[in-house]
Length: 52
Image (cartoon, rainbow, N blue to C red; front, side, top):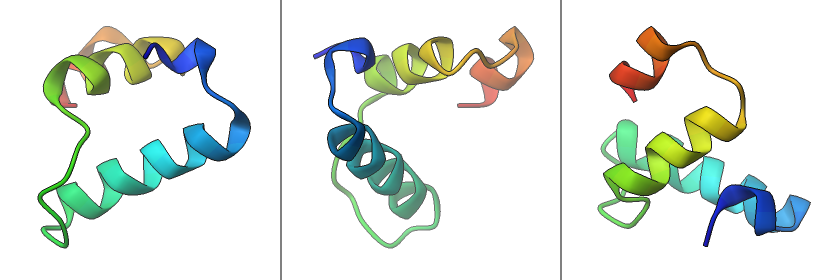
């Protein structure tokens, strides 16, 4: 599901999951495609999207 289709709570959960995955606290989603869509949705510059 694209981030624009998420409720604010679902979006917060997705950001939390990405944060936990980055910190090595979880192996759950989001996958790379979801991360790129999320970065684009949040208006991140291309260089930041590349890091995501």
